[in-house]
Image 1 (cartoon, rainbow, N blue to C red):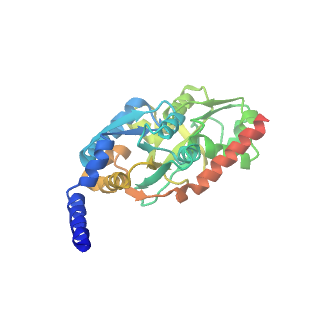
Image 2: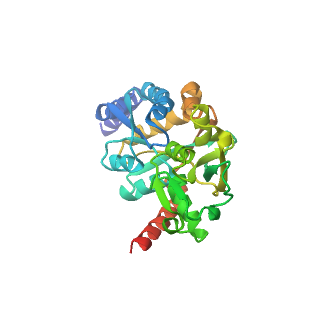
Image 3: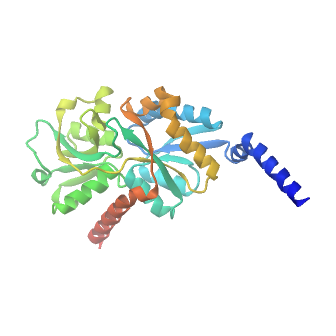
Length: 304
């Protein structure tokens, strides 16, 4: 009798699983998934880039997926901490901050693969092409444009790199300005409100600057790079750790298979310049966690 019950339960389990019963369980718990993006560019640009991918995810997962565009990086972190955002697109440093703030309550699962098969990107410093500056050391007393306190390429790596060169930004520069987004940093440089601006860069043909050029916002030849960082880990997508495992697996699978299943939506994310997604885990961002710890210590040192 016991054996028969076991056989019956196994049969029921098999039918339930193969007919999507477990999936229906998470769908009733999460009839809507909120996907948030840190503000690398203006809101209209984020919407245009991400909306086709959001629609693809909704079709694939079988639930409504809603795009949220945050005003700043901290808003995404705090919203995931509160459990209001199930999927988020971070920079490496904002992910590291989210891991600390949520005590491991978020899980990175993929990052994009560049056109050359690598993952990761760089922090660069731009000046105007017709300016006399050729290195950060030439900019003493000038205005510095950063992006956001939680931006990897727009704040954390720049501060780390400048410290290694003996540069204290708040003392070395006349003014330090947080512009709020990578696009705003370039625009501040173009308009002359800052003399140097940090940004993200993958290659000469794939950067925030080239995206802005493609939109007709700026001309590439008007800017020149005077600093390039070592390679940074790729910007990750992360889910709430508290989500059901089968939901997390479904989300990750949708991402991994997305470049093949909806190439147009995937290409829109990166102007057709990325190959696909590569799996990542928290361990891949340990160096960035150490980086933000270093920057935090610098901040406390100057504040005390």
